[in-house]
Length: 245
Image (cartoon, rainbow, N blue to C red):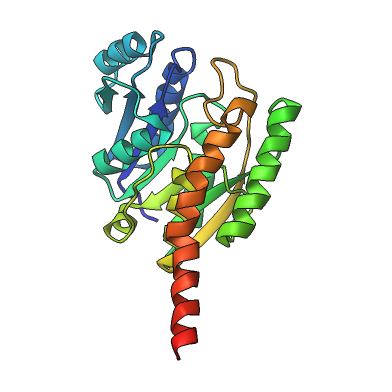
C-alpha cells in the first residue's frame, strides 16, 4: 500500500514498566511508514504508575492520545474503546506489556494487499512459563475446533485491520474472549485474513491478566455463551428448520 493512514493502539493495564517503550517504538515505526498516523493508549484503570508515564509521554509526543478508563473495564472493554477511537484507515493493535514488538508492524503491512482485510500475526514460538504454554495450547485447540476458526494462532494479539471492517463487525465482549469474538465475526462476514509470523518475548513487567490457572474457569464461563451466540444458535436454527422441512 502507498503510505496509508494508520492508527496504532495499545490496551494497558498496570503496564507502567513497558508502555513507554511501546509508544516510542510504535511512533518511530509509523513515522517510517506514513505521514498520517496516531498512537492511542487505552489506560484501563491501571493502579500502578502507568497513568503518570502516559501523562509525560503525551507532553513529548504530539501524535499520542491517551484515553483513561476511571475503572477497569476488562481487556475487551479496552479493545472496544481503542477500535471506536481510531480515526485512520488502518488499525494496528497489540498489548501494552511488550511481549510483541510494535516494530514488526513492518511485517504486517506488506501482507495487506488488495482483497485482504485483516493481517493476523502468529507466534513463531511462545516465550512464557511452561504452565502458560500448556494452557495456551489447550485454549488454542479448544477454541479453534469449537468455533471453527481458521487461524494458526487464536490468541496472538498482534493484528492490522482495515477500519471499514468495523462497519460490519460489532463487538460486545468485555473480557479476553473478545479476540475470539472478533476473529469469528470477521470470518463469518467473509473478510479475507492473511497470517504472518511474529516474535513473542518474555514478560519483563507485570502479570498476565488472561492466561493463568485461576482465570481458566472465568474464561470458560465467558466462552460458553459466546459459543452459543456465534455457533450453537445458528446450528440449532438450521437443525430446527431441517426438522420442520
